[in-house]
Image (cartoon, rainbow, N blue to C red; front, side, top):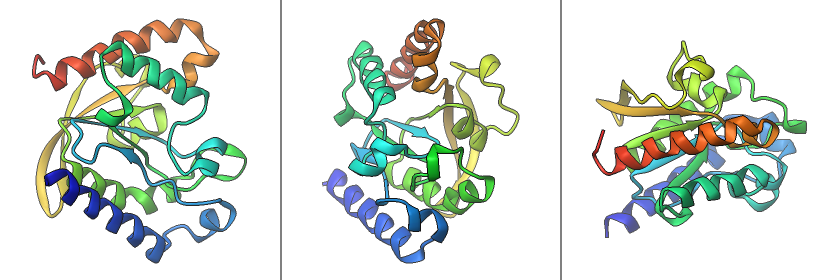
Length: 198
């Protein structure tokens, strides 16, 4: 029942973004809203920066080459897409896959916090520098990856503690083979936090 209620709340939030239209210029050139997908009652929420071309066309996050590697990493810790929830900070594809602008990230930030408040995960795993630094202002990904941090954030009007685990973006491993092993190692931490071992 809880899962169904959470999914309904997420659907309402997606509709609210369409109504509010926080980034009209981005929306105008995108195919569709890429809100998020997966288990609305997940223990872990993965957050990337913004949809790319494949995601824009399909309407789902992480469906390209980086998404395939993400699936492989999930498999390495006995998880599937249906176990997790995955989204991006920015919900429309920036033109030509450019980095999202600070004001675009800021426009979507309140909706992302609402998503997190609905799902109530044990851990938020950020994928890449952009999403990591949205939570951890002084993030240096090469230094901080794989190290869980506790943060105080306001979710639904209440101050709560969340665990944020910064990870390299899966796309980085496609360009740099040595990061592949690093990401696979860091993924073990996701599994241990979910199992309450950390």
